[in-house]
Amino acid sequence: MSKKRLEVFLEFLIFGVVIGVLEDIIAVRVATGATITMETVFIIIGIAIPFAFVGEILVDQIDFVDMWERHVTRKKQQK
Image (tube, rainbow, N blue to C red; front, top):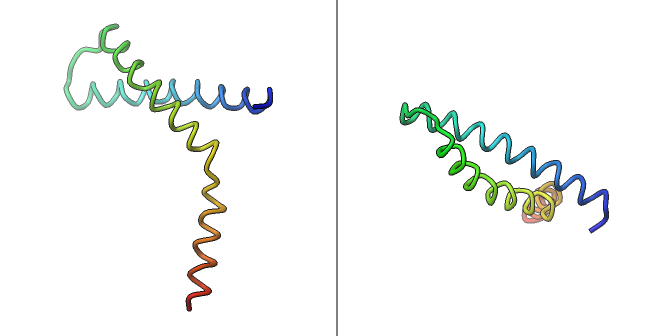
């Protein structure tokens, strides 16, 4: 992995973790009405990091535009 690619990966990973944690804190507060403590935040961070990592791996490795174009082309050929 090149240095630039690693840099972009880490930027998106960090951004994904921060946004994931914020939305999970909001969801916990709204859904349960519980007071958000540091323990709650640490649990949310522990859950958010693996999901952000997997999300970045998927986004980085799968070209969804290419897959969509192949799907549309295949559908047109079948007609």
